[in-house]
Image (cartoon, rainbow, N blue to C red; front, side, top):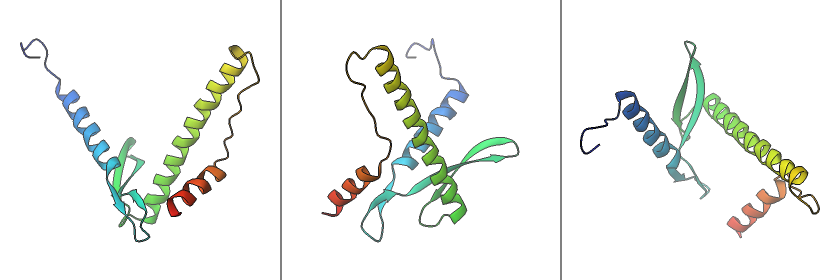
Length: 121
């Protein structure tokens, strides 16, 4: 780059800018009226004239529909992560593990309760 042998293409610069903006939106947090540390901005992917676009909204002013869609899409991402974890555990247990199978519980109810108790305790 210093010698001019390589220059980023305009589409690359736009992509980098979009990535920086996305990270900034995702990393902005506020304290809610109950004292919780929560995201300020929420993304929701929609189709606009046949093209997928991501819309960002402030959680304090966003429509209920936007927030429902954002939460639904984030939950879908969590399910995808759990599916990948299950595949990895199953593969290890069936292909490599020579002991008792490693068990992973995907019911997070107790984990969430413990985290909330620790935050409120």
